[in-house]
Image 1 (spheres, one colour):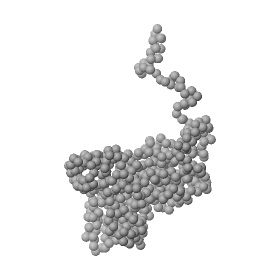
Image 2 (image 1 turned 135 degrees about the horizontal axis):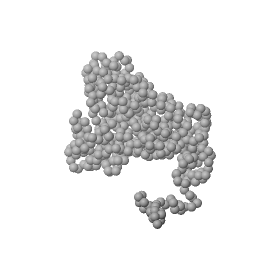
Image 3 (image 1 turned 90 degrees about the vertical axis):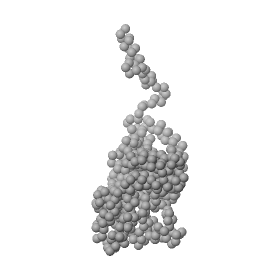
Length: 502
């Protein structure tokens, strides 16, 4: 496939030209960076010299997210995102997405669908990776033309790409993973207004969406009644489908090998692992909130929501901004018993086996710290679906809870009643006073059941605290100042040698 077709040069240039953008950021993932100069050159030839193009790579967070921070550094008017995308809502800049066009044999795909699924009486729902969206119309056409007698194409429903353009919005009520029932009475009146460009696309039924795809099923049907067919690779988007719709029968068609795969026991084991992390997080006293995005709409609201949830559970939280988390970065915060990662859905599931403390998602934090909540098997990957309407909507209980790890009932330490009314300055002063007052206290007196209740307590309980600063004598002794001269012979050494020779 030639460069102009793969990266949709003409379509991208028309988008930039029609919106009169003069400064455009071109964002490439690492695997496509080799084509960045050729794409920029092709766009410049198409647009002329009136538009300045900037290539961005090595994003601070996941490459599937739009790097609004990097685009702001060059004062860009919009971002053109190439490659795999999570299609998360944005806050400041419009974005245009070029998913790419991975090769697929449509005829072989349709024949494989019919051969493997025709004997099943269940209806079929076809989902796909965004890089195969270009082949959807051909798949539909060959379904109708090649298999008219079997009636197979009549029970097949298809997902569609929501849009290739995302404009900044503060509204987080879109369709993200969880189902939304939509009863269309007319084009202007329905139970819930959806973000859709064409009213004709809305039909009476239950509407779903995940990872840039949306689809609908009839009201009298349930999602469990369908066989989900995923066309694409086993990437993070597919993992989200398996977790979100874990009660459905799911099969995957691999276009590269032209074969169907049905065994996803590995992905389903992930649910057991996540439940284990939820139970472990319940016993945490200090929680670190990892900021995994600075661009997705509503991330600040979710961080504040997590702070309120953790505080109401009688635990201490610290907000950490460190870009992409790794083992070395998280090891700098050994006081944190667990981390909550606020990021896009496709980067939220971190394999924390190598970390000192587990990393969980906001949904798992809601289960762990929101007392009275049980896991029913439902899994939410988009944190936008967890937004609450107003503060104080969490149910906090003060009775003891059972810990599976400690093997007994424990009672979490509850915050002071007026703690929520204190400002940040007063909290900082109290922490400073607590640190000064606890210097000479024994470690056992500041630990609760073997673990600290705050970062200050953890620091004081450590056996090594750094240099022992002498508070009584602010002037350091002379031997700490250092030595003068070169390493080959310092001044004091040369004087000693000279005096010995004499």
